Length: 306
Image 1 (cartoon, one colour):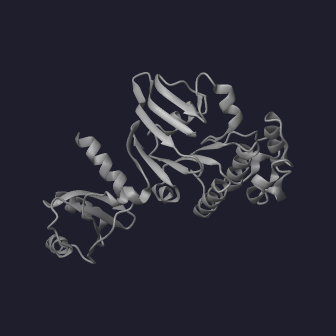
Image 2: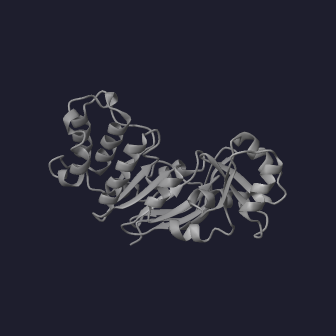
């Protein structure tokens, strides 16, 4: 059985097309990432899959159940962690967990083994109101509540947005452990580096899936050479490289710019000579391997040029 299947799903809000003819499959036991910027359509797709929103057209199923006809069955078998903290802020940590366990006719004790690696980090604060937890602690509580009934599929909508880097890493370590317990996970994120933690990803932009594959396979398909370029004056560097006749694209990445050349003959030394002619100093230019964000930006360029 395919845990999640989406076939030609579209959804519009008035004149805004949130999803356009989306199709994808999530395989049993995998961590599947939906990777895209804000407004790409990730939350809309998740809300359709967890039966909170109706698509305009197309079909979708979760665990073999149609998201429209079988919504009650789906709600009993999935866990959902929305992007915005949605637990009861006035209830304590323990009261929130007990409440969600009761809804699904189970108990914290019965499924403690599933959440213990997560819950033990917040258990010392079990009597604290959920609204007074830190961002990372709220995240762990929300995940515990989504898992308390031992779901077969877990939907996590931007679970690490606004969380510090250490908590993000801890969270993804937890997802790996959850996945090992035969729970299929579908997670959305705007953070490109998190794509590497997924078994497969779909890159989505403006409601359209641009590519679906393993992160390594997507990177291997990057069709251009790539250079990392930096100088003392980054602002002027962007302007000069944009005007450089041998530049195809140039985007800022941290302290450097990533440049794809208009032809494959360009060498790092030629880039440096051009920048010297523009009076740049502390110049560095070297050929590098692409990452998933480079691939995402290239696919966006292809889409815009169509």
